[in-house]
Amino acid sequence: MSVSLDQLRGTPEVRRRANTEVGLLVLAIIITLSAYTLVGLAQEPVIPAGLLAYGGALAALAAAAHLVSRRLAPGADPLLLPIAFLLNGIGLVMIRRVDFAEASRDSGLELAPLQTIWTIVGVALFARTLLLLRDHTVLDRYRYIIGLAAVVALMTPLLPVLGTDFGRGSRIWVRIPGGFSLQPGEFAKIGLVIFFAAYLAEKRALLSAATSRLGPLHVPPARAFGPVALAWFVSLGVLVFERDLGLSLLIFGIFVAMLYMATGRLAYVVFGGALFGAGALASWSVFSHVQTRVSIWLDPFADAQGSGFQLVQSLFAFGTGGVAGVGWGQGNPELIPDVETDFIFSAIGEELGLLGTTAVLLLYFLLAGRGFVTALRAPDDFSKLLAAGLTFVFSLQVFVIVGGVSRLIPLTGITLPLVSYGGSSLLANYVLIALLVRVSAARAPVARRSARADLARIDG
View 1: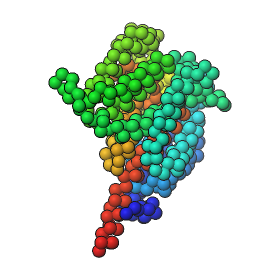
View 2 (view 1 turned 180 degrees about the vertical axis):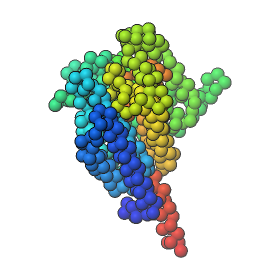
View 3 (view 1 turned 30 degrees about the vertical axis):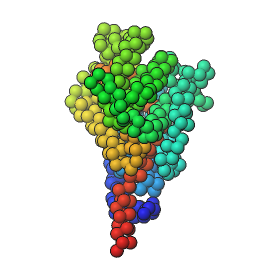
View 4 (view 1 turned 90 degrees about the horizontal axis):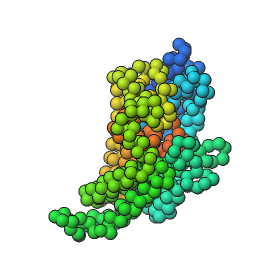
């Protein structure tokens, strides 16, 4: 027996989840405003003049997102939106901090107001996604259209008129009217996850069958490895033509991970790892920018004033921060080029130290955990793979950027989700959160209990 949304909204469990979400959103606003105040006090010993207006705007955004979420997705996980909102708030504060640092050098840079506008648009897009997508399983019907659109979005920056690299080497931006730019790859990742989830849900049985032998091992048929090879070629194409190492890694990593989650076959991971190793070696042998990234990673101090300058400054920032950090507004983030995008985690490390960076990483861990719990509780294969894939691409992006700025892995030039400056990344991640919220509501454990109760009353 089906249970209507109105019935769901009235159940005690859904009310408890709604109250939990409200409380966590209030806590997120308090933390954000406290950080904003500390950054302002570091500049002048008075409470920032715009604190009330800023707090009111954040409260209005949080209230709007909460009402839409509870109205359109009752019973959804109450942690997803507050964690995303808090990470976004921390990012806004850090970008404001960078603005102050750059202003001291008379650069005239003002990114925080622009990022605030993108935040408003992001929350609106979050609400719009929930409004238009009442049932996420309809995405399964349009898998090939979505997949094709994702590939077209990936290739758009290669167009001679629209695409540009802004002098940074990677051709990943598209110019749009009004002096703005867009990174289509941020949205293409979501489209590819949807396509992979639909494809793997349908072909799961075939891909799971171990009907061939490779020495002493039983492996799936050779044709089953075709999709892995295709994903490898697409990722290499992004690396070769767009010179974007980070996006290339994400595309291939998404598919291999989702393939393993769909089948449980370790052979795909081994085969994918071998392909990745071969592609990485070939790229290092052929492309100078990959050689440069690897050389910087191996020894950034070999050219500390040249190619290794960014990473060296990042490492100095972490070292300066120590355990507790130098304090909000007391560091020197302006010494790191592109600190507001690729290296914002380094600025957090300097001003908040090991404790602050650990807190931020725990927020990401908690968000990833709730995403995978959503996947485990989803009612069908497509929903499980969709939630797991979205969570994985989000988590992989965090690992890649944090690993890069801390010299765990080579730098890839991608942004820290919800924290770094950038409209494309912020908007895409709010869509991602909306999809996770939708899937978490679809599992509806409350609905199942209510249905059982209704059936019991009918039987009685």
